[in-house]
Amino acid sequence: MKNGVVECERLSPFLARFLDSSASANLEDTRVLKRAVLGELERLLNTACLPEDYQLTDYPQVKTSTINYGVADFAGKIVCGIPLENVEKQIGAAIVAFEPRLVARSLRCVANPNANSDSDLTEPLALLIDVQMKGLNGEIVNLNLATEFDLSQEAFVITERTES
Image (cartoon, rainbow, N blue to C red; front, side, top):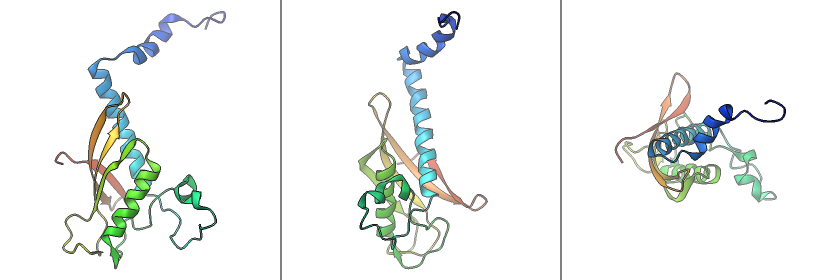
């Protein structure tokens, strides 16, 4: 800045980013947004929320606030006797509550898709998540995601599936 005036040469690349409406710029923006959403979903799945028995009846807003950010603590654990349907509902509710860039009505979450039994969670948790994401320019982008528990990191890792 010279005498209170910003140099045009320095502003040009900055302004070009906002004025460039080419398809390649939109594609790159979508990729960046997709990476950000996947990173946020990883954080969500690897963060434990308050236990269900925690008394929140006097504070109903807390259930979907950042104070209660995360999912039930089943990451990487073998949890016997939890119905898979409950796991899918809890994780789906957390995704809807904490990731506003996704279209809630499009969310489909399947827990342990390769499990022998479809009634209870009896092995480490794996997920298939199909959902639509709102793009920066209003377009809808389909996301087909899979989670894998990485033993070396002791955390969920989310990857994009190529098949739907």
